[in-house]
Length: 242
Image (cartoon, rainbow, N blue to C red; front, side):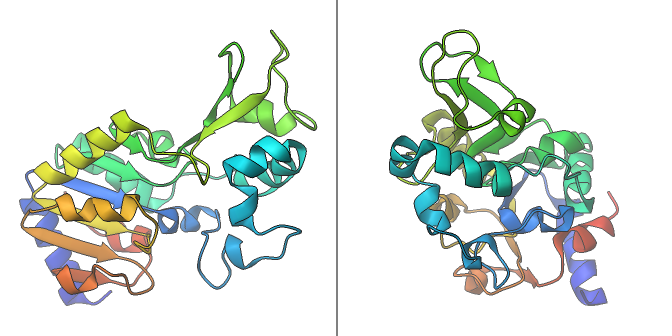
């Protein structure tokens, strides 16, 4: 990031009255969690079935054991720690600058860093529920279970509280996220290709003063942005003084 970019980012953030951060998988790559669509991302690795197929509701229902084999291996990164981006965003919330984080990630690292107002569009690996009785289980329980995880209370099938392909986003979370973006005067979009809908369509609700894009690759929203940063998000945000 150039000094000019840093100074502009610093100025915009300091002047923000209600900033919203909209993030994707690229926010967590600095924590060692692979993204999906980059050259070395999850979707470019080789499996018996494409990840998009495995992470679908149909596959979960029909091939539950195979789903969980992939899920435990690739989706549960429980040793990952919040990186500089997660930590700075938590600081920005504490400082009264950041109003909300809208995330497509399911890793819970924003909350682990101390953020409180987080809209998890795609759910969280840390919440798992019995489809029969509603009993709740954490991610470690899923990780250390074998085969198809069954409820200890009733024997029902336990499902991660994550949004699979073919499933809709949670309505309450979507409503809160859309309202936050609509009320924001500054929107930072970080670590997302903006190619996955309906989440990518949320940008059309933003009518504030400054749009900042932080992403390694070009996005469909680049032409609308006041500032584009191609560096790592943690590195870019860590130098900002609040």
